[in-house]
Length: 113
Image (cartoon, rainbow, N blue to C red):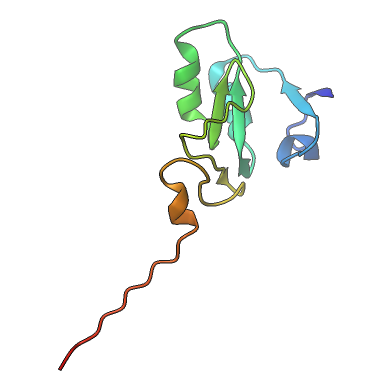
């Protein structure tokens, strides 16, 4: 379902919606688009759709999200870490950092007299 919204305070805009719903909002400038995208307490993933070859990386760097796909949706790669920003969760799954999220480190010292 595609929802065009004009009110950024709606629950479908502000919350993580784990169902087949896409929210679309109109914007006039790139700065406004970034501000709208970042104006939520969540940051699991984001998409940048454009015909421009240079702009998407500049925009993606400004987005507060753990996974950013350009001209596609949720391009997960097992070689890299995946995880959200803000209230979308802590830690990463996948990639070389993944074992650290599942490891409890303990230091034990012993003196021998």
